Amino acid sequence: MQIIDKSEIAPNVYACKVRAEAIAKKVQPGQFIMVIPDQYSERTPITVADWNTSEGTITFIFLDIGSSTNRLAELKPGEEIFSLTGPLGNSFDIKKYGSVGLVGGCYGIGGIYPAARALREKGNRVVCYSEARSKFLLYWNKKLEEVSDEVRYATADGSLGFKGHAYDLLETDLKSGVKYDLVITVGCTFLMYRISKVTEPYQMKTIVSMNPIMIDGTGMCGACRVEVDGATRFACVDGPHFDGHQMNWDLVLARRKAYLDEEIVSGERHDYGKS
Ligand SMILES: Cc1cc2nc3c(=O)[nH]c(=O)nc-3n(C[C@H](O)[C@H](O)[C@H](O)COP(=O)(O)OP(=O)(O)OC[C@H]3O[C@@H](n4cnc5c(N)ncnc54)[C@H](O)[C@@H]3O)c2cc1C
Ligand code: FES
Image 1 (tube, rainbow, N blue to C red):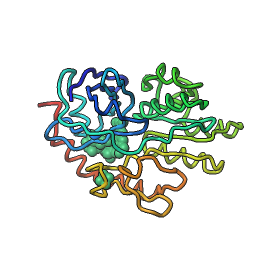
Image 2: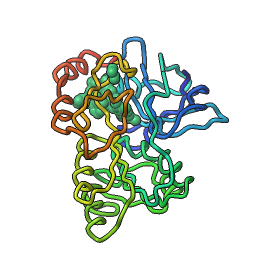
Image 3: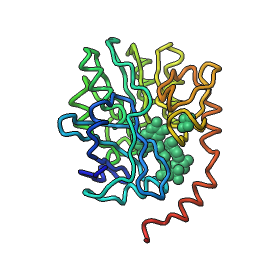
Image 4: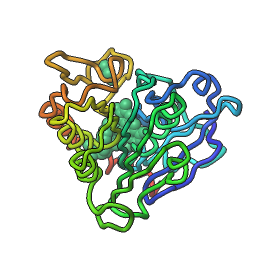
């Protein structure tokens, strides 16, 4: 698949547009693709953040954090991605709920964008919460504002909007009487965990977009196992979206660290930047 456009939209965060006609025709908000940057890279699950059916292109946002995403960050417009498969996983359930809060952090800001657009088209009031450590780490502000009734910004240093995390801002809003018929959150595990804890006392339905380690992405290997309401589920085929109040978060956090040593060794061996 050919890269049409690629740019660093915030430090270490890239937006990549590729030609992928078949995926652009089928993809729905919340689905992901499996990207293999070059023949030596691992299969890397990445959420589709935008698409253009008539152009036959899809856009995804990724963080350069390890061997495979590092290789992806090095590829230039005009170059080919070795393999790209999708759309995979289930989409969000897009229908009329009333008022929907969408919370995105890191790559999840891109992840909530198509959901916000589709939910608003269905007549929902859409409020997005976009978080980063500082203003310069936020991206797609204008795009999000175009598809939302309101965008609430949270920055750890207070350089834009609320000073603190998105879960602190959401908690402040809920305490002041704001009500959502549905909350959706996409981003790092800790953000989704904290958002689920904030909404739980209000019994506010909360969907988390799980990002466990995946290998095949088609339900064959079991690597992406999570426990939801006491039952084992595979995030790649049963999810990646689950009820955050039913998630066994202790298991999620323990399993995320399973290959930490190997990831460090891999990062050292695949020193792409110097080749
Ligand atoms: C359904 C799904 C959708 C995703 N969507 C996106 C997306 O849109 N954009 C994006 O940047 N990333 C996304 N991720 C996370 C992405 O797949 C990982 O960041 C990537 O696989 C890391 O590969 P690597 O070889 O570059 O890093 P590795 O060397 O494998 O890991 C480097 C560091 O990243 C951490 N890491 C590994 N896997 C994950 C993971 N699944 N999530 C978060 N951190 C991880 C490791 O613990 C380690 O600290 C998604 C994951 C899933 C399961
Ligand atoms: S990634 Fe293998 S079962 Fe989900």
